[in-house]
Image (tube, rainbow, N blue to C red; front, top):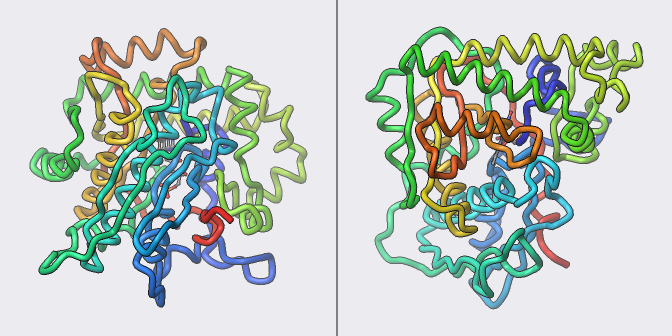
Length: 374
Ligand SMILES: Cc1cc2nc3c(=O)[nH]c(=O)nc-3n(C[C@H](O)[C@H](O)[C@H](O)COP(=O)(O)O)c2cc1C
């Protein structure tokens, strides 16, 4: 997925401002005291679930409430990434992350979440209009909140350049040992040689995507330029900060420019992203023996938990998904990723760098109510 894209070079360099004042509603409002004042535990849980990571910040979730305790999660099918994620694997991972945050928030109120996944059958080959999951919240006496719950609002995807400091193995072991019953493997490396191979691979995959028109066109649709557009749309990848105005006024942020791998914007973004890749001190990855939709959801649960555990431990994380994407132009790098990760006969569900970095501001979210089906 997702993010990478040269535009994200600008994104990372451009702080996302906490308040948009006169320019529209605060796109990061959802991160402050999510669900405060909600009497319905489902709405409290929803306010947390929408803070989940999703590829390109697509937020492709829709919910319907039923009875006093039920919630059905659907994929918002128009919010998928058909070029870079043609089989909806990453979108499904984002749904798994949503479900886990919903469950964690319910646990903080003393509810257990009874989750039935794909209750009307597993979709194939892509997600469809059928439900992704049905969740019933059941009051549970003497339950304790999941210890990852308090970290939901502090979790970020951190795309900064990372410090040289290498997270120690004990810390990585702790971060990767909370994966919520994911039926796959969660592994990491901070070994110099393997990290070097992965830095080089994620960089080349980034560069490949930069040169793949269909992927760039797709990313362009998810870019949000400037505070006004971010505040209005409250999704996607924000390009903000003083540099954006200058760059835009130079005519360097129109679509053709974005699609041209040789444009100044793309060249400088590529340089910036290469620096980020080369700063990675360690990588974590999730892999599974099969790639069934239920396994993808499980990978989303595991990734959300991993990202929250990393947050709790003071570690920054940033997925680099380009090399895992299932489109023709990426096929050789996809095969290389599997070789480097020793996962030839498996599906690599997520690959992320992990380490220490300056904190980043929260990304945009739509209002929780916008996710509820009318
Ligand atoms: C399946 C999946 C793949 C992702 N791939 C990338 C990626 O390749 N590059 C990137 O910068 N972020 C990636 N992300 C992170 C999202 O872009 C990020 O979650 C989203 O922009 C919202 O930001 P937040 O995580 O800080 O809330 C991915 C997230 C998910 C769930």
